[in-house]
Image (tube, rainbow, N blue to C red):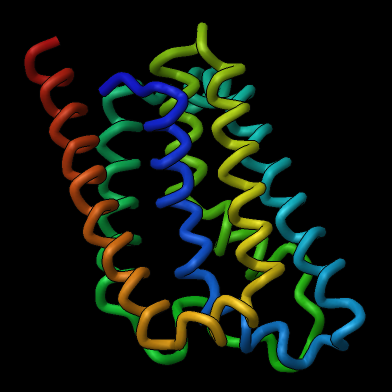
Length: 197
């Protein structure tokens, strides 16, 4: 499945799932002093971007070292995306990653795995390995998706108050449905390439 800048941007935005991060982000940040919340959000988004950026550029070498084929990565990435999308549709009250127990988050759980989780890592690896000649397009799409995610996290309280909890939950489920279709497409494309060459 070949991508354009727009389709890669939308795919990465769905995988990063900034609206779906709000129910996790808000309780984790509740105990962080208000003056530090903006800095913590920017720092965590920056760390997530660096992790995904590294995976994009060193993904091909990683595949060779681990002796993985693009087909297995495509199917595995599709399965992970499918699991994430099911979590988005059938969400839990406590979230997947739990709470921060009053500590300021650092890397875990906001940067990794909330933003730069297995599904996002698999997605950037797949983009870079399938169309390596367009890697700068994927960097641009990743940058734009991370900017949107950062803006959503910075404005999380305002968004929640403006839309209401029920609308945010409905948007997350809608994103989950779209991501489910993308995940199935990735799995089918990987199986097709495996069986039909």
